[in-house]
Length: 559
Image 1 (cartoon, rainbow, N blue to C red):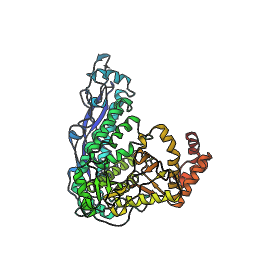
Image 2: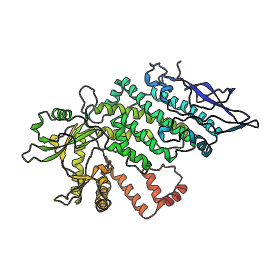
Image 3: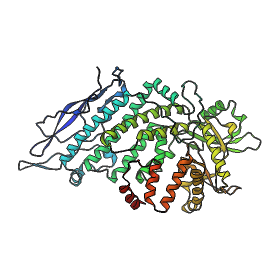
Image 4: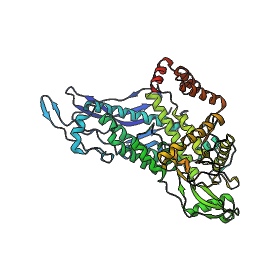
């Protein structure tokens, strides 16, 4: 019977009676048939000053399926630690040590984190003395990191043996088109279809593994730097945040459209990330390189089935906006009135790229979930489910016909509720396809570019618009970042001052959940935290077995 086996060089720590840390490298074997991990240790005879996390060796995972049928090892399951972990710095030794009553000086270790704004060698002694962790504690922690590396590789191996399926949509809140339309050549669905996407993943296993290897090559060195800083200094000091954020942004740009979209989403989350990181990720909003207009014109003609001048009398020479999934042109319709419109054109081949990236993210989420379950079983968050919902929404954003339907429906919701102040541009359905969206042009600026006074004036209008969507219609814009809210240059004839654009990601909430949410808002306003906790349990925000007596006073303090 073939078993999954992981052979890796691991650091084993031995602390001598004189408190001198020495390191011996030993081979550790992980057997997935047993829950234990055995690492033999052996004392070393000489002291060392530089302690890498992993030895300079090749870490190879040999995998079998869960049914013990052998599969071919591929490049994605072989990681060269010399290459991926080459950026790991050693843990600096203490500036001085005393052994057996004598005095000895340890040589300062040159770090490899200078590009992350770390102090140079001249500051090693100061950094060491100010660190919250002792030298012995750092060495012990580095052994924990090695064990964690082994566990991570083992979880990755287990995930690699699974046949990952595309997310199920039965429990999704995303508003999407359920009809089936397949792209020529690739076999990928133009609308979200779980079965067809899963078939594509199986067919493109080699390409998916190659993409996974590229992702790991970016992720592992970065995460290693985070762990290194935490071990050497006991925390991620604020002085390192700009450098780490810059590296993260550069890696995201290298990884392409899917990751850029995720980075853009996180760039408006001050509740999650520090300001320096938000500023760096904000660069992603304007850093996307546009594709050639000639390519866009060819795409338009192919989608609409005729020459450009059959539909438009003019089109801008360059895109007025370029995003990770598409770019927008200003055009005039061949309708006799030269009506100005915005033409949104999807990037070529983005469907295949996104499909592969969703596999990579799904696999990464599975690995992360496995590590959480192993090291923090008290965590109740289902990270795979969170990724699944995001993945469904992201894939759906590639369906511009679905976006046109969403935009038209949202426009009708606001009109039917008599809202004055916020509008949604009209859609020209006869010119919309899965890859082309044509809608009314509006002149304005992003709300993020408006003055404080301007924002203050329109905030009540925007609030009312979203309360109508959320509680009355149960159909709401799920991506309302500042770039999707335009402050109009001049009010419209109807008195609208704000335009809500980009309806690719919309969500539905049924009446039962809306009633629970309204109940929660009322209890929050009345500071009835006992009832609010019950509302959160009914909504699934808190688990049914949560400790209410403990949570209620904490909620009272927080709110």
